[in-house]
Image (cartoon, rainbow, N blue to C red):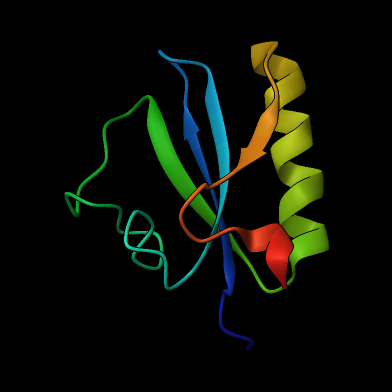
Length: 78
């Protein structure tokens, strides 16, 4: 099994959909900053940026928002 290198954070109350690299200080390999999750926000990991982007765009359409890359880890910068 391949390690998840990219993560998508979904926060339904704020309609946030954000892409991160696993090592990002905000992502922490899907643990986030606080290490816990609420029922209406979650992390989903992927082994490629393309898979993460497809998922993020789908979730963003459902929330009527845009999927954006993290400003700190810049997953698009690879």
